[in-house]
Image 1 (tube, protein in one colour):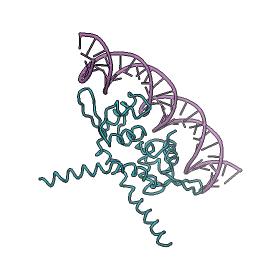
Image 2 (cartoon, helix red, strand yellow):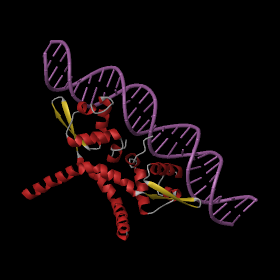
Image 3 (cartoon, chains in turn orange, yellow, cyan, green):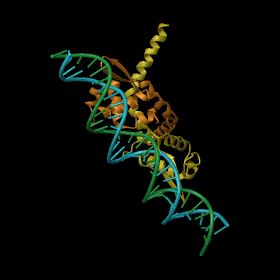
Image 4 (spheres, chains in turn yellow, blue, orange, brown):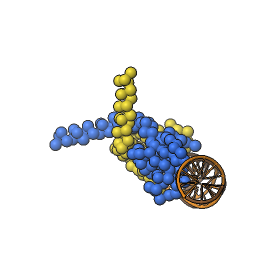
Amino acid sequence: MRRDIFQAIADPTRRAILSLLALQAMTPNALAQHFDSTRQAVSKHIKILTECEVVKQKQTGREIYYHANLQKMKEIDIWLDQFRKQWKDRFDQLDDILKDL
Amino acid sequence: MRRDIFQAIADPTRRAILSLLALQAMTPNALAQHFDSTRQAVSKHIKILTECEVVKQKQTGREIYYHANLQKMKEIDIWLDQFRKQWKDRFDQLDDILKDL
DNA sequence: TATATTTGCAACCAAATAGTTGCACTTAAT
DNA sequence: ATTAAGTGCAACTATTTGGTTGCAAATATA
């Protein structure tokens, strides 16, 4: 089973979960209230996010608080780097056009 | 059928195709030579990339040259923005630790 | 102690995914 | 005019995905 950050953020629900967990740690129950699907479905998403280490957990009693491990997101950022030069080039082209006007 | 840039880059073969097309435009045949799977399989990936507009085509005779439309990648970059502050915070924390030493 | 809450895990299901082969169409070359 | 090359599309298949329900284990509360 492939389990990398790119596959993890492919699903819109998982992206939403990540956005929520970036703001504050939450339990699966609390998270599930933000979505239409069942708690178990949300838990499955959490499991996938945990497996690729973009989400970490901390147990307190019977509750488990999940929080985002945003360091993992750097992998995406680093992958994007190979394309950034061309964004910049395109931006420079636009700049040239604006100068000509 | 969901067809967005996040789902597009979830597949490692599609990421490799994008990396190749960022360097130079290529035909499906030329692209397929870089992979173990069949030309048709690669063509399917190209189709998905085209549908979410991260790849554009230009026909010359019977050949079709595909090239990367890297502007689309900005969508990912923009999505990452919401997490960047916390990378920075973490970086600042490391900075503080280093200062203390 | 008995009951309620929080959670993870397993079994199951429909749909999507990534791959294959075969075929038809268009364009180039002989 | 025939043949070869480059491409897209359809049909089929195995696997993965995202969802469900049911249940058991652990912890809190009455």
